[in-house]
Length: 398
Image 1: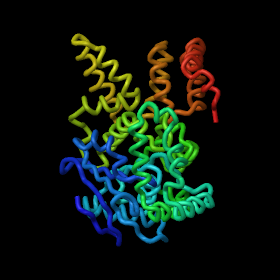
Image 2: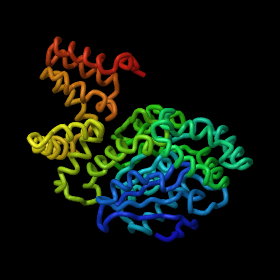
Image 3: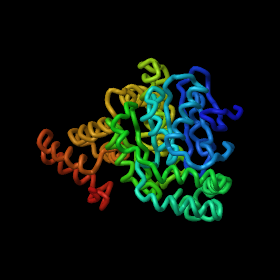
Image 4: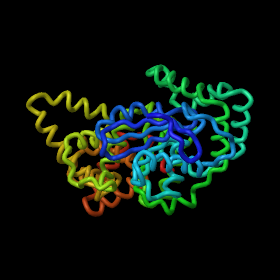
């Protein structure tokens, strides 16, 4: 796709996926390019129409003068969406700076946002002076001057040993970012304050959070979730800032499940034909890709039809039904397992429930309620099972 001039700037963009498929737009983080979304687009381009682009001053989108804000980046995105898809709502996915851009778009142009997925981001700058300092450092010494600090925030320490190629590619994108493009976006982040506007966001929203993110700590995603009516939360661990690369399979599975969950926002039929594929995506998103793939590999010829049945019904039809959010389904599942004394299944669903937004305070309240309606011995078992799985983590009620 050639460079596109929209909103007075030139943006480099690419569209992949079949015509007529649900449109999804990906917005990159500060210091990366649209290539950061390669794992997600590779997995999704067969069933979605995926638009990725380089934010102004990044990648192949030329540097523009300073003096723009997040609202201008949102207007860039609005113009790009209208140029590519027309004035139709699209699913908007953005990480860090891209998440800020997506939230600003949902506030300014709600007609263009079918669903919103902000990842590893925040809605109001906590320390403006730190962004002034970072912009000055980059203008004086280039992105190289902060590259080690940035990389230490982007990924957990173990990733450089387990997947060095991921870290190397991210560093390449960072070092290729023009100093003025990076610094000008720091100026925009310095003045960020979207908090008041989030209460008016109408689009279904799922917030992604990295449990180990020092650049945008989980409490900042909790703030976004609390501000947007009905928003959900997925917290991935281990994951630092660029979670879609560090936990690419989990991120992609959650994202596919979420977008399928919201197909009706684009006029897609509520009864989806590909229940098996969507059930597989939902199952991986909730339980983790490694667990699901292990279960499928161990099934054998005799149990393979049973695995397909689970995928179509439990994970395709039930978990794929948008009538209940995943947080609610997780709580219901845990309560049911308490009532039936299903220890193994309870433990299987416990951490996924936390990833789906169930807090430890809510979990404890649900188990205390179970003592009243199910029985004290059952609730006592549940408290023990939580301790077995979470250990001392169960005491972190903040």
